[in-house]
Every structure is written in C-alpha cells, then in structure tokens.
Length: 228
Image 1 (cartoon, one colour):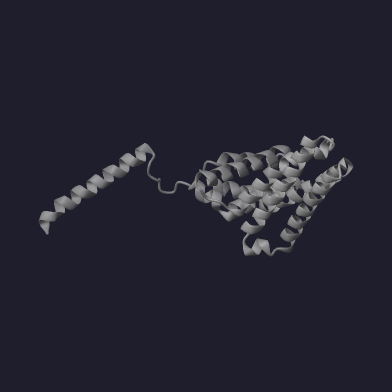
Image 2 (cartoon, helix red, strand yellow; image 1 turned 30 degrees about the vertical axis):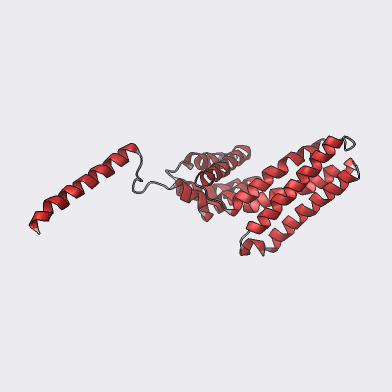
C-alpha cells in the first residue's frame, strides 16, 4: 500500500500541472465563467431580450429598463454583457433608437453563438424567415413595373421563398407555439398576403402591392417580436 502512494501523489501532481497549463492556454473552462453558448440557448435570456425590445418599440422605456436590468445580470461576464448594458443605458436615458439597435445586435450575437456551436432554437427559424422576406419590402416603398418580366419573376420568387421559410417555421415550432392561436393567426395572415402578392404579380397589378406588403410587414414584425 505504501509503495503506491508516491505514484498516486506523482499522478495527482501531473494532473494538477496539466490543468494549470490548460488554464494558462485558455483551453480549460474556468470555474464560474459564463457559458456563452448556454446563455444563447437559454429561453429566459431570449424571452427577456424580446420583452425588452417590445417595451422599447411601444415606448415603455421604464419597463424595458426593468427587464434589461435582469438581462444584464444574467449576461454579466459573458461576451454579450456589453450589449445588454448598452441597451439598458439607452433605455434609462429614453433613447429608444439606440436601445432597439443594441437589442437587435444582441439577438444577432446570440444567434451567431448558436450557429457556431451547431445549435438551433425556434427563434433562429423566425429570424431567418424575416431575412428571406426582407427583399420584398423594397417594393412596399417603391412600386415596381410588373410589365418588366425580370422584376415580376424576382418578386414571385421572393414571395415563394418567404412562404417556404414560414412553412419551415411552422414545422419547427414546438407544440405550445404551434397550437397557439396567435401564432397560427399571424402565420396564416402572412402566407395569405404572400399568396395575394403572387396573384397581383400574375395580374400585373402593381397598385395592390404596397398595401399587401404593408400587411405582410406587420405580420413579419409580429413574428419577430413574439418569437424571434
């Protein structure tokens, strides 16, 4: 028994030395260090970011600040702490534009962490669908000439892509979201608007597009605010 003790002590010393080297090299986790990927997957973090963004959007900066205080504490020490703190400061001084921008940057940063970690949550599908839809929004502001075949084809293709993106989100939604009446209403409204856009393009009726795309934007924004 006594003959083995030096060997055990020696092995423990080697292990301790190896851990120390890994820590110095930044290859081993430090006790208490925030896990950025875990935070990016945390439903409460995602919910607080969405709630704060909604409060900012509706002009409730004081309520946004309360939510952002909680979010800032959760993200303290992580790679996202600065964005949360900046959003909080902007909300506290009543700068809705800056607060909204920082919150959107935070959403993108969290999404990038998930992508880098090969992880996915439902919010990723919603944000992807919004990006697929975005090119269509240009035609809400500037009415296109649908007699130009390339323009008509581009709009039809964009509408089809956006509809497919929404269909993917319906498939990815968990039971709670999928069965939520508001979610079903919003997605149905968005897909109906996209179908009407395709019909207007086929009829070369550009006058309908601004109204249809305004409705579509409202639906996409609602999806982003509630689930993105």
